[in-house]
Length: 295
Image: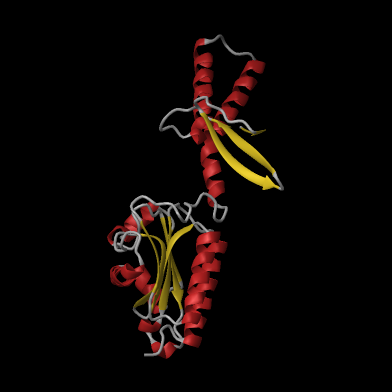
């Protein structure tokens, strides 16, 4: 439950307030948003409906066991109560699934520190200016509009860009002086993943267009725990192929767009198709301008 009250802030426990200040001419208006919670440390208030449903189900069961033989009306009322209790218990799971279907909702803010992850924004120094702008645009669009928390763009054995939350292979909060070593270390980890995973190798070689690990179980089964470009909190991984300029260029001129997210089933089918379109656009840009500045 949320209330909007101008100019007041509560001091009671179990109430969280978030103030926003706006200015219009010479007048200043303070608005406090009140959110009433149970105030129990370590308890997620989103689980309140489940607790209420369980409590209602237990009371219904006790009433049915120790009460007299129910009449027809009472039996119908108990059936309705059981249905409502089941709906309450299922509400948190339904809410979580609905949020997963909404692009960009519930994603960790870009400026926050993810558990077990190092934040980085680095572009290879040899990348030409036009491609650099395309890489910056593509990475921003994916981070902004989807549940992606980190991404890598790998082409012809070179890591062109790393942005967002990365695993331990990236230096913590890498500065411009650390970007080169971080990109090199991440490139080695991506190369190692292509050698260890037949599925990623299939994407790089053109036998598959993409490879999707939608949850933590599939990440563990796929061997992602051994790839140090994947942050510890990652729960989804999408590997999308970037086509080479021509078939004669072969495997080494192809590329990969790797997306990581801290939520299971992070990308819908439409978002994965959009990521594929961005990978194609980047491939065309690489073909037109070349990935690197001329020597």
